[in-house]
Length: 113
Image 1: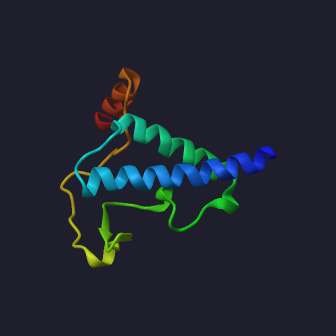
Image 2 (image 1 turned 45 degrees about the vertical axis):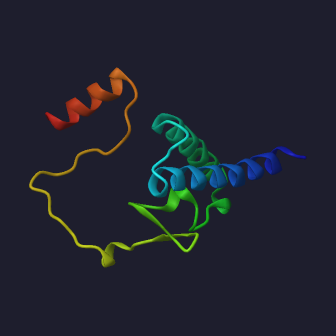
């Protein structure tokens, strides 16, 4: 097996894992991994898809935005046009994950500029 195939197989594996973990979290309300572990897997998939852009597909977990809903055993999405919109009084400056003190300080600096 060449290196490319190993990476392609890992992309497929990560997608299956992330979909399972999303179902456990959003549908079953019984996550089996921490948010940080999930985020690390997502970042690994994002990095591989950046390295192999021809492997990015519309159904990849990296291409989803917002809440996911499971319908009849299949993952479905509600488009923005189907939901209502809300204008925030103050702009949402960051929804990025932070797992270190430096991340928290960076967020604080952005908010208080």
